[in-house]
Image (cartoon, rainbow, N blue to C red; front, side):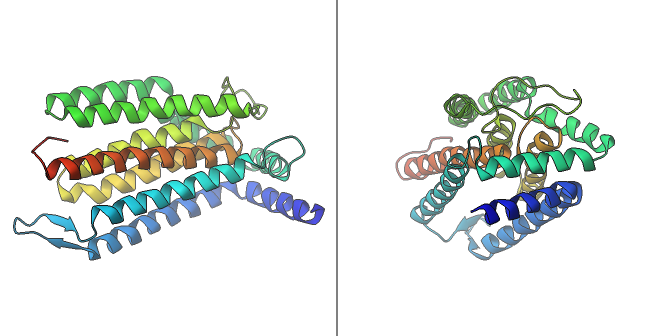
Length: 275
């Protein structure tokens, strides 16, 4: 057990020392994975008589995929939550990674990350929620507007509840570049960005021309990952906080998207409702 803890701590120190290049490697890997998934999904679609692309998989398959994503996300979250606490290996690795990162990342990079963390702040997200909701109502998409608001507000309540359950103290701020109140686990910025901008990407897939779909998804992945990573670089969250935020946000986003897609499928079989 001690050997395992020592190995994990040494690995965390190495990762912290190379945090900036690892960030770009992971960002590139996520974009490559997105392209691979996009190509795969395109292979499993066929055009209808109007030229629209319809999935060959049934609604049941979509629901099964959504259920699998939720299970994986909950599993990741539970694994991290189970290793929190004083003296636990995860806490030691988190602290080692944070300390090594602070000593290796230049201040200019921190200033750039501070700009990206703004996208997950409360005021911009409130403005985004109100603006998109008004736009959807104006377009006659009242059900989409409702789901949009429920998704973002519901995730906020979920995150606040989880923070109160685990009550993890934040890392000590390195130099006062950014001060944050409240508990640390899971990261509200990370989960909030996943849900808010993930739902925005879903709306783009629903409402924008097909040529904008892949760029919208690529931009969403880049923004969400960078905003989440910025919390670690700025020293207001541990790495496990951000991963847990990504996991909880992904689970909630999948619940919302799967729910609205199931409702669309049911309504299409009965009557025409703009959802």
